[in-house]
Image 1 (cartoon, rainbow, N blue to C red):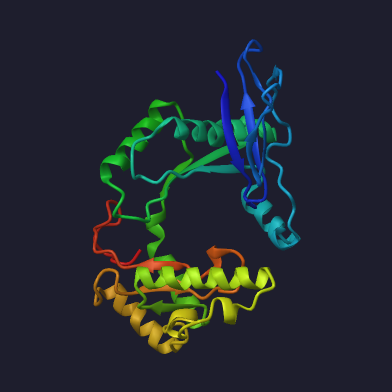
Image 2 (cartoon, rainbow, N blue to C red):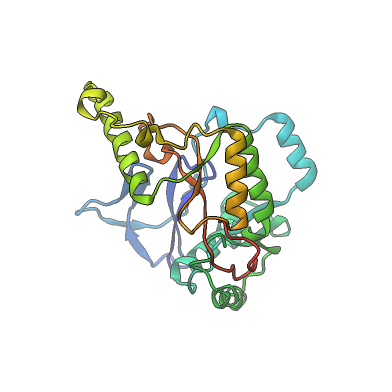
Length: 289
């Protein structure tokens, strides 16, 4: 059978389409994939033999993303020849064919492409369980059963929710450094804010004056009335969020990013929301996620 996988490298800089086949009689049209384009094929392209793409796991090197020699030496000291991958589904539903492809990639095909000997292969099964509103114990149990039924054996099983305390500590650090703030804007206000930021960026990109074409009606909208709140007040309000002293949806913790970026994902993303929903694995100890 032909197995197709879209592979995103850890640097997120290249996508590749990898195929393997158990018999040479299988033939499919030649397919190409890049970060900027979806798979394309010529209407008159002749079918070609499928072969494994030898550089399918390679990625464009980015200077800022390269590990230091010291970090690489520490990694080698801890891990030796062991290579690890992960299979990280969210337990918000039952497994489907896409999960089966991902399991094949993370438990087998990735190692084959990298030439990793069988004794050095390790795969971590991680539940990406950070949204209690969408996740259930039924799905957690079914994912484990189906993984075993398909014949895969992980090195260990982990839960993102086991790191809630550590993640909360990171959030507090960001607040102390002035890089995160508690925001009382509603969802509708955030949408208006982000749309205004996007339109101002487009004005600058096209040589127009954003103050004329997309003026800021009030600093309460952009950059936002909560963005310059003091560190002390933000720490107090974030603790109140954790203690459940606000209504669901009343407050969020947002990252202080860049409203002048051409990338809308930089418009002060929400890091924590209030949800009064018990977590299927972590229980009822948290109301911010």
